[in-house]
Image (cartoon, rainbow, N blue to C red):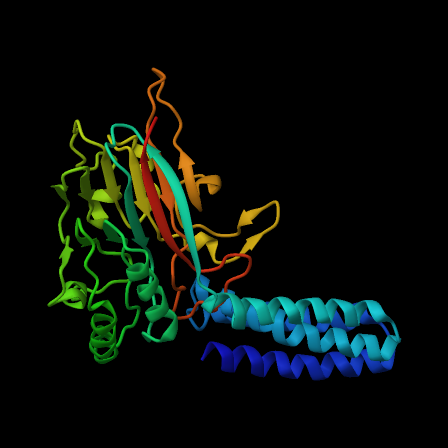
Length: 347
């Protein structure tokens, strides 16, 4: 519905703008016609058709990456100026990268992290936000990269299959399970629930050696202690994270738990997707999280307490997948990530 309504109205506006441009030779008037049409689309979509934030973003993407370049090329032809054509080319290149290159351009990152009290190096792989409605080559490549990393511990940070159709969920569950066969890290694998996961999410890991954490639990894994948080506990101001004398890892879907100064050496999370769209000198345009924007990607040393005591570190993965449903399926300057974390003894 969103693509149909948006493109139908803007196509009519494009024709009207071209007529105005041909008659007046005034690019500003042609742009005004399309701008008014876009305003009508977004207002009607929001208040008459019930589009949410992601629906409005999708409409914006159609306007910006399809209709704007067409209008800019027309301006270049009519005015015989190169600048509009150059702008159209830039917008087209950004769109090609954002929609057709980066979403499947997986980056396997390796980050060394010093963890106080750790006796020996430990390799952890953080798999965040597979978030797909079809398990295909991209998702299988990410899981194969997990296996190839030869990890000691694998942590799944939630958001696996995003669909409202439980028949689709069942079909993709089988595809995901088939891809995960053979995953056998030395200290085990653990999975928590994300925001888009239905109540049936634990069935995704049936028959696999993966510990499904449906309520917050703490596990003594030998060299480290792991606390895996359920969504409500991760959002609590007092999450159930017990003190421990061993190096303490905390797994949560959202990174917001880091704001509570938990008793943890390293918090591992996803959810933000790196913003999916990042701009130079600005960073993520959207985080949907309460953590500071500077914490939204990668490794962050958390601020010290008022007494000067260290509060550990936070690692937020950019995630493997993208927001589905009505959201525009794009990434820009924010490639999908599979995070390999090499934990080392140190302060």
